[in-house]
Amino acid sequence: MTRPAPVRTILKRTTLIVRDMAVSRRWYEHVLGMKVWLDTEYVLSGEGIAAGSSGDRTHLVIMRAEHEKIGMIGLLQWLDPPWPAPEVPTTVEYGAPVFVVETDDAAELERRAAQLGSRIHTLQRRFTVTGAGGAIRHLLGTAFFDPDGHFFECNQVLHIEPPDPGP
Image (cartoon, rainbow, N blue to C red):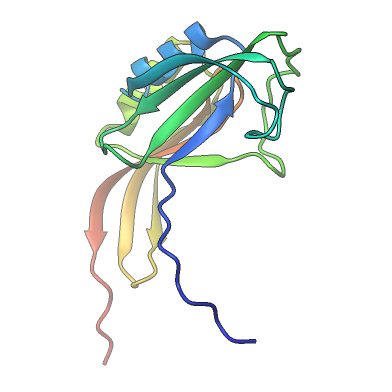
């Protein structure tokens, strides 16, 4: 099989279904420092998203990180009819995203998440990973869940060792 020609793609946003827009919006603003890029209500057509039904009224808030095009998170709540919410997950399972955040202060993100009642999965810890180019990254990391059970791994780069050039 021949390899297809490359197609330019940019993953701009992930949209998460949330239970309570006010709670989720506050969490993303306070913990991750994101800002509101769009705040609007939509009535679904029944064709664009593989959820809900035609005529459902939803509330969409798109939160923006530092970059103006990537790293956005959409928060989507069903208003009418309201969706019954399952229990908030405390583990990551098939189909669930794992968000990886790079920060300059992992301890502060953990503090903010705990302040808002987030389930902290991993307290601050130091660890190393070897990157694709062989460089060793020394990190301070923490991991926690947002109010709806979406999992966040937050890492602060402490030091990078260049790859060993070999003999």
